[in-house]
Length: 466
Image (cartoon, rainbow, N blue to C red; front, side, top):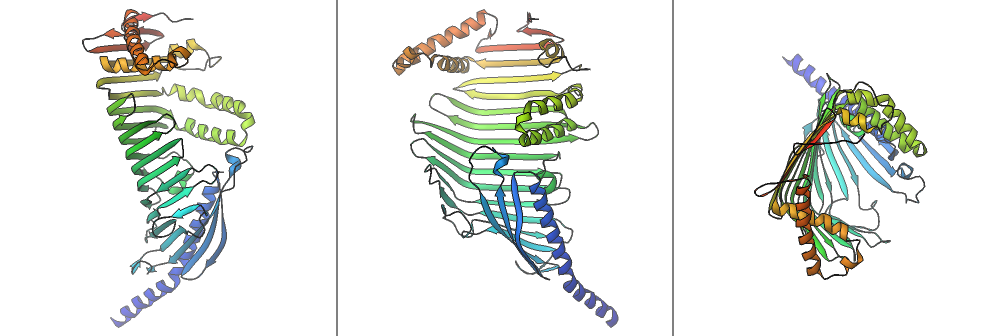
C-alpha cells in the first residue's frame, strides 16, 4: 500500500513540475497560431514585441496595428496602433483565481496607460481586459470587459461614450460561442446629430474553431444582434426618431452532402416613431437557399483579389463568374421573404415573396440577356395593405418626388400636407384603374406571378418586351 501511495505522490509531483513547461509551450504555440491567422486577413498587423517564457508563466507584449492600405491605399489615413499585455499561468495547478486544475489561466488587456490620450476612463479597471481558463481537455472558457469611457475627436469634436461592455465565450476545436452586452452607447456631433442606444446585445455560436471563424471559412453558425432602444436626433432638421425592441437573428445552415448553404434571418421591431411615420409589430423572415459552398468560397477569394488589385476589379469579377456561376445557377438558388407583417400608421401590411432560378443548363452569351433571366425566373409575390398604410406609402413616394419642385418647397406645411393627401388618393385610384392594384373592402392587394417566361399581375397576363 505504501508503495502505491509513494508512486502516486511521485507522479503528482512530476506532473506539477513538468506539466507547466508543457502547457507553457502549448500557450505560446497557440498564441503564434492565433497571430498568424489574424495576419492572414490582411487587415491587421500583429506581432509579438517582447516575450518572457518561464517554467510556470509567460508574459508577452503584443503590438496590434491596422493595415491602412487594405482600406484605401491612396487615402491619407492615420496610423492606429495599440499594445496588448498577455499573461499566462501554466498548469496543471492554477492559483490566479483560486486553486484549480487546468492547462492554462491567461489574461489579455489594454491598460489606461497605453490607451489614446483622448480616451477618458469613467469606470473601474483597465480599458479592456479578457481572462480565460483552458481545461485539461483543451477547451477555453473566458470573459471580457470594456471599461466605461468617453472619447472626443479633437479634429471634429465628435463625442463617443459607453458605460462599458461585458462578455463571455467558449473556445473549442468544434465549437465557438460568444455573448456580450452594453448598457449604453452614445455618439454626438455638435450641431448635427445625437445618438443613444441602450441595452445592446450580440451573440454568436459556430460549429467550428476560432481560427475558422477568423478566416471566414464556411461553418454552420447562428448570430443575433439587438437593442432595447435607439434614439436619434437630427439637430439640423430638428427631428427625432426612436426605435424600440429591435432584434435580428441569422443562421447559416450547411448541407455538406449536397455542397450547399442556406441563409435564414428573422427581424423584429416592436416600435418605430418618427416625425411622419409610425411602425408597430414589424416581423420579417427571409431565406437565401441553395447557395453553392464552392461559389461562396470563390466569392470570398474574389473580394480578397479585388482588395489587392482594385485596378483589375472588372477582369477579376468576370473571370470568377465565368468559372463559378453556372454550377450556382444549376443549383436553383432561392430568395424568399416568407413573412413580412407590420402596422404602418395604424394600417396593416402583409407581404410574401418567393423567387427561384430554375432549369439552367448553360450560361447566356451575355449576362445582360433579359430573355435568359425571364425564361429561368420563377417568382410569386403577394401583398395586402390597409387603406391608411397604402396612403402613407403613396404620400412618402410623392413627397420625395415633389421635394425637387421649388414651388412645392416654398408652400406652407399645411398646404403641402393637403396636396400630398389629395394626390396620394388620386395616385392609388390611378393604380387601381390601371390594374396594378386591386381594391378590397379595407385596402388594396396585389399578386404577381412569373412562371415559364410568362408574367401575370392580378391574374392579368403582362406582355414582356423582347
